[in-house]
Amino acid sequence: MNEQLEHLDEIAREAWAGNYQRTGVLSTGERLYVALASGRMRELAPADSIAYAVDRVGTEWMAHMLEVWGRQSQPLN
Image 1 (cartoon, rainbow, N blue to C red):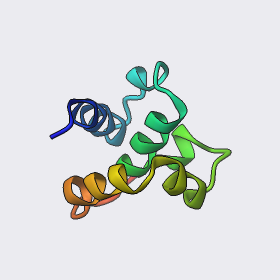
Image 2 (tube, helix red, strand yellow; image 1 turned 90 degrees about the horizontal axis):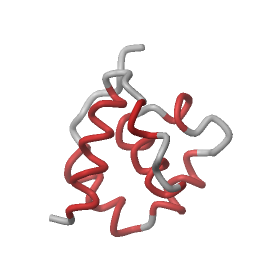
Image 3 (cartoon, one colour; image 1 turned 90 degrees about the vertical axis):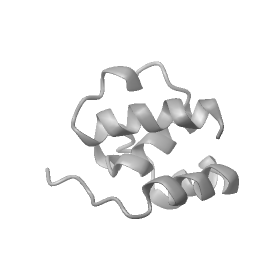
């Protein structure tokens, strides 16, 4: 598996739990991946639409996200 995506999945797990400390240094594409994967679009990308985020992340990263995160629930708060 891609080390970069594994790293982003770690950050997404933290973001899912409400910890956004490691998101500040991410590129736009990385931040959007984390926002989509963690269900934290409002918190991490409030000015971006989901459609824009999916397009920006791209098909390869989206396929990985669906494989890793497809069965995860959304955060409760």
